[in-house]
Image (cartoon, rainbow, N blue to C red; front, side, top):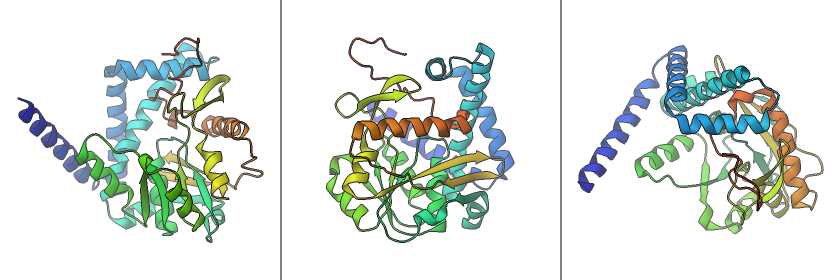
Length: 298
């Protein structure tokens, strides 16, 4: 029975990947319409994640009415689903289609040259469009930290998709800091997604929407070790694809105080979220780890 279940799981995974490859050839409005429908279905059926989103909103947007939270939560599920289905064309459609649908804007000059650069890429739904935008516009070798997926077929599919354009080198967390810092100092930009909770041993508690929140202090750490500037990258899902905005490098960062730097990162992230609140990964338990003695948000 175990072998049969394993076979069935692999067959389902292959079918899903085949579906995504076929979806890549549909017009974008059709893909987005499917994503909107899928988001509505998931909102109704996945009660556990719906409750996570509403718990996050109760902390971050307490001034919203119940109706406003409902509409924002539904829109969050829709954006999440649309971005997930967009991986079909990002990873499988002709290159010229991707170039037409993904636009790189803003302070693009921050990514020129070979100076050490940490790209702060928060968990917005369009993060996979961000990889593609940078790789298509600037095929400079870059790096990021990757956590293996438990499903090896899905893992292979994701890796191939994210490495489709340019040259993106992925480091596992078990490889440690040294090779990442070495690549950073050699001029390979580091994509970093540090707005995460890795538990009390690897996080510091700093404010996020007024609540002490376990946050990885890696942005400050890698900027200091790599003697690198920090450049935020904000991918925004739009009607005709994605706008990926490069913001100016932060001044006076890192400061030498990792706690203050991480608090500053969260404060800046709040400002970014305010411009597109439905496009952040609210489906994650961002407030899972609490200071000792404090009750769970969830």
